[in-house]
Each structure stands twice: as structure tokens, then as C-alpha cells.
Length: 130
Image (cartoon, rainbow, N blue to C red; front, side, top):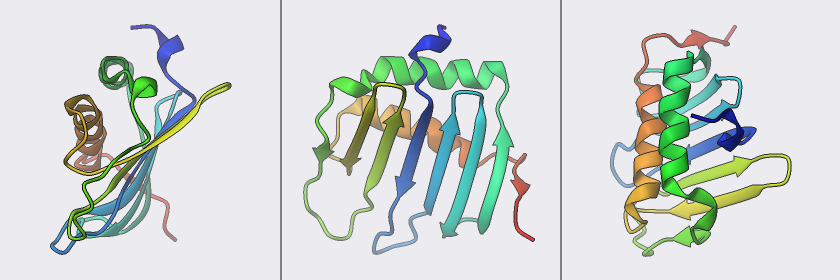
């Protein structure tokens, strides 16, 4: 998998819902550094970091490529107030795109979000809290 398709960073933000949805911000950089800001409804709370290996990075890059992220609309929201909203944001030298969506989004965006969400379940987070 070509490292060139990987933007400088991919960020995912999960917002609250009426229930117990996990609320967090996750940022992945091209070098495999992941930062998690865990806010609500997770076993973790606060800021954590993680370093991905090449195999994990290739898996995410592959799903990112398949998502054709830059070709999607900027918003897929049905407007239901009790649904969580996901933001996916991609930044690079000459690219910036942010997509806001709920369950009505195309499957490729859900696949990318699910791939990133798997990282939250990692056992290997290091706490940055004092």
C-alpha cells in the first residue's frame, strides 16, 4: 500500500447522543501516531497516545483508499436529534476535507469510521494525564 495516499492526518470526532454513545476525538498521523481524547462513555477518560505498527497503518490506509474519501459530499445527516454525529477530517499538503455524517452516510464512510473506532478498543494506550 502506498504511503502517498495517506494524508498528513485523519481525525474522527464522535458526538453525544441520547443514550450511552462513546464521545471522543481520535487523530491519526501519517507516521502512525494516534491521539485519543476520551470524553464520555468509554473506559478511558482524558488524553492518551498510541503508536501503530506498519501492518495496522496499511490496514487503515487501505480502508481510507477504498472509501474514496475526497469524492464524498461534506454532509450526510438525516436530522434526528438523538443520533450521534461523526466528523471525519482529512488534512494534507494540498487537501482539507471534513465530512459530517450520521447513519445515513454511504457505507464506505462507515467502514473508515469503524476501522478508526477499533483503535479506541486498543489495550496499548499510554496516558498523557498527570
